[in-house]
Structures are given as C-alpha cells and as structure tokens.
Length: 136
Image (cartoon, rainbow, N blue to C red):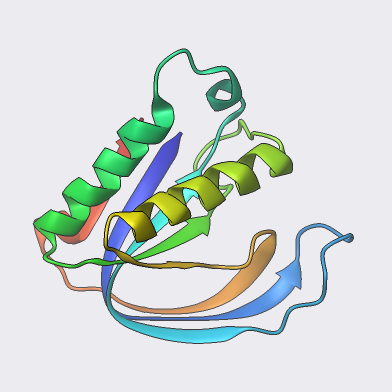
C-alpha cells in the first residue's frame, strides 16, 4: 500500500468521470477545511499481506493526523502511486474498514466516491509534514 498524505487548509472536489462503467451515476461536491487527506493506492500484494496492514495503515493515519493537529481525515482511493492494483472489491472493503475504524477512534472521517475521477481544488500549506509519502 502506498499513501500520499496532504494536509489541506481547504480541499474541494467534484465527481467528474467514472472509472468503471458499472458504477452508479454520482454527482457529488464537497468542501472540507483543515483536513488531512490520504491518497491511498492499495496494491495487489496487499491482498495477500502476511502482516497486519490494516493496523499499520490505521496507525499511520493517526500519526499524521497528530502531527498536523487534526482529527479530520478524508480517504481517497488514488490508483496512480503504483503500477500494481488490488481488485476494486478488495480496495472498497479495505477503505470501508479503515473509515469505520477511524470513526470508532473518534475521527471525523470522510471518503470520496470510489471509482471516480475528481475535479480538485487544493490549498495546502508549505511545511514539512504537510506532504508525506509512505510505502506501508
């Protein structure tokens, strides 16, 4: 799994195009302020991980949120950090599980619609931990 974290003063998105024809039509927009965004690439090898990848990812998200002093997190499936991709079903299941665990841990969690390309407006500050890449 690869994750690109970007802390955003303001993050706006709008659904643009479906990546898969069988998805329902969704026209969604959102504007979120002071939020940690996690661009997550779930890879094929993650489907067979022999270590607790879920726990490691959850701890990574909690760590970056603490560093950026926020309890707000947006999960976004971002299949552009690696050539390798898990199945859509596994990706959806993994993101849903992370989302639910974040809620259980007191985070204000959000998730972009799976399988959609988004129009983005990002306002991100320029300090060290505002942008972090991790290969989990």
